Amino acid sequence: MKRLVVLVVAAAALLAPAAASAHPLGNFTINRFSRIEGADHRAYVFYVLDMAEIPTYQAGRIDARA
Image (cartoon, rainbow, N blue to C red):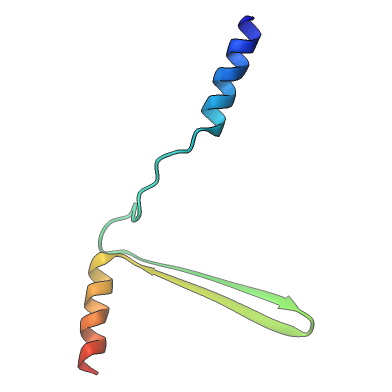
């Protein structure tokens, strides 16, 4: 019975989702990710740009003036 309780508690701890915040580094961060994959004699480039609240607001102001 004690093993079952330990197993259930361990499983619950491992399967419980952890809290995640949207921008753990702050409101001024810009995170970039790029990946290059090759397949069938082609190269694929994946580029992700994650801008926090303030850089996004500033970029919108720049685009509006252009």
